[in-house]
Length: 152
View 1 (spheres, rainbow, N blue to C red):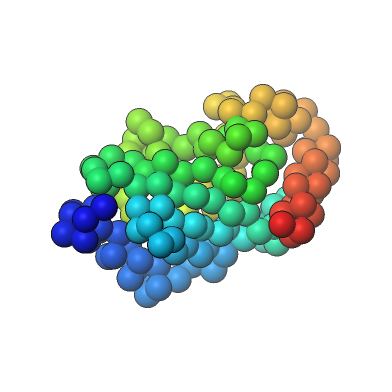
View 2 (cartoon, rainbow, N blue to C red):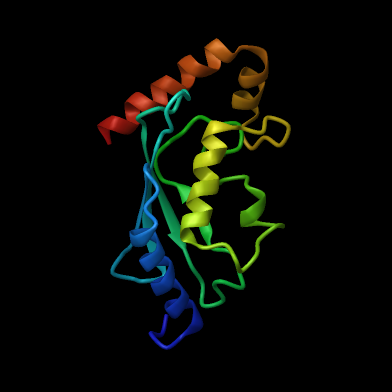
């Protein structure tokens, strides 16, 4: 990514906003390759994900912000809208993408998804079924992933 590109300049603005408008539980930073970022989301309070440390990878093309980045979890997580391979089912990352979204907006939406799963649009059918049929079993399963997230 050229330092003169629109994507590079926008990512610099996104990084400044992350630092200025810090949201608790959300951290993101570019790697040595500025179009690849690492992010960490701390599981929100009063959810089964509470205190979990979940790592993500964000990949930005030269078309960012016109084109959505690829975002996926690198830490295993049990969630109706997150595939076992880390892929996230979130409309703003696909059919509802807008160039007005930035890194902080994307990560805030993912944090919100942890708080409010959508079992009607599952990427993980087992998690969605468990979420709908037995919240206590779902919480117990999520807790296993939270514990593992702290060991990585």
